[in-house]
Image 1 (tube, rainbow, N blue to C red):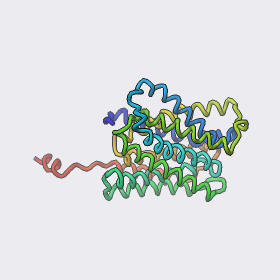
Image 2 (image 1 turned 90 degrees about the vertical axis):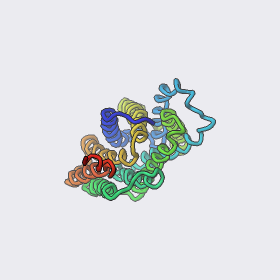
Image 3 (image 1 turned 180 degrees about the horizontal axis):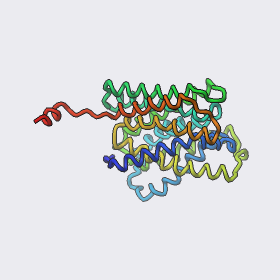
Image 4 (image 1 turned 60 degrees about the vertical axis):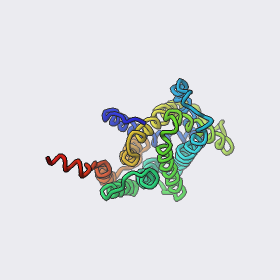
Length: 300
């Protein structure tokens, strides 16, 4: 993928943090109208159909015969594991707390990117990743209402693992597949799989097709899933995956604030402390060092 301008990068990051943050309480609210697996399948499949409109004119870049296995692996990690476990897990824990646990992902992404992508891992970056995790941990430990389910925590960690591995995988094969077709097909494949699994355990008749649910479903499918994933992989493909991941530490903050208004989940001083850790994390992970030769040349 080509590098993108700083202005476009900032726009995509702001868009991503906001819509993915709002996604958590909205998804929690949607579960009042639908079983979790069917909801996960329908929203991801709809997101894929929306992107298919934009992908079809680029059908020559699909190369399905050569790349089908890439699409399937990506769909399993980024959709089945991430969205499937996430949507089921939201039924066991408050949305803000669940999202905070899932966002151990940037730490995992930093480690995976170092191991499999050869991205640099220096002292300040390590400290930054640790601070980011500490911020999320501080937020998740503070005064949330509702029981903390061990099963819910396991699902949140599994969701984070799938997302981290999926991001590194897409970055690794980025030059071999078209980015738009990758996002489109992983959504379609993952959506069909989750819908089939959901149909085996849940009933379509139990979905309440009321206006709040339909509005919620359309917003999530269009902005959170279709354009959200496209923005995320555009950013990952244009820069270091771990640095993009560091900004996603801000998403649980948006999720917690929105959850406090929409779902009446409580906020404590831990939110403020966690925010400070997260801001420091982003700063440390994104510090750029000039090569020694360049510094020496600047001295003359």
